Image 1 (cartoon, rainbow, N blue to C red):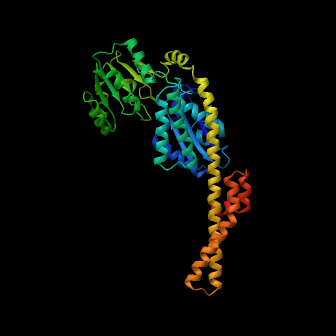
Image 2: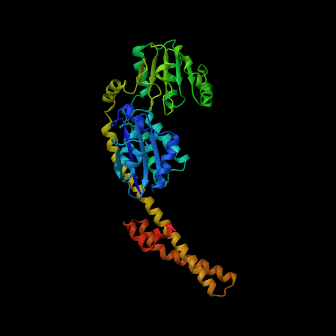
Length: 396
């Protein structure tokens, strides 16, 4: 079984084009189910502001992946990348370390990968191999963050710093739409000196948030547009796959907005000043130059990690073969037992002795092949599979 990834990111597509390939949770389930019908065995989908990627385990040909990916989003073409084997794992490690992020070594991507992995586990879309890869990845990145420490930074931080250039952040009325990671990440920067008004489709999340931050106000989601002419700043960070603020919703051109979502929450043609991912390009470039000093060291550690995990993945293959050999011995013992019991007139005690003897004998027959697999004396597991018809038995 091999590992692969297909997707698009901020490196290939501009902001308005990336939004065409964004997955909602419902779409993640739908697309994963579609891939399973094509013989893909394990699936994890990572959909963030900067990338839309499908990670998978497969044993069949995957040349069909680009066409299925494009067709699902009703797109004729896109600069998709497809990576397999060690290169796919290298890509995952670099992505989760933040080396492939718009903001190098940013903090939010680790949480986003963890959320994607948790979703796959909850929906039973993974398996032993995919779990190993992502658990090893998450542990590796935590180790790198500790080993190569740096000041915490995120796109939220850069957005707030940019906001300070155009407005003082004191005694402002600020409406924040959303209750996810990005929306709530603004609270530490704005809570003490401003009035924060939250609105979200799921009000339960905001009730819990208010327990932690008592000063915030909550309004129903369907009233969000009514307050637009009463607030100084609008921050929108929902997971809704369409605009929630249209051009005509904005009366005052004095309003300043922040929209870091993909797809966008706020109509880009609105006559307001809106800070989005493209707006932050300069700040990102400056910070990337400062934060790139340890990238080469991390890449060297990634090379070591790839070899380490490849060995662990190979051991899983051996585990499957060993389990199959043990199951084969039990199957043959049971078949032989049934034949002999039907031909011989045996007492209950004799049948019990016969059953134990047959199972022990057939396990003894498999002892040498199992030992060879365990000690890596056989590198070509296909030989064992063919010799003992293991794949045919598993398919049955």
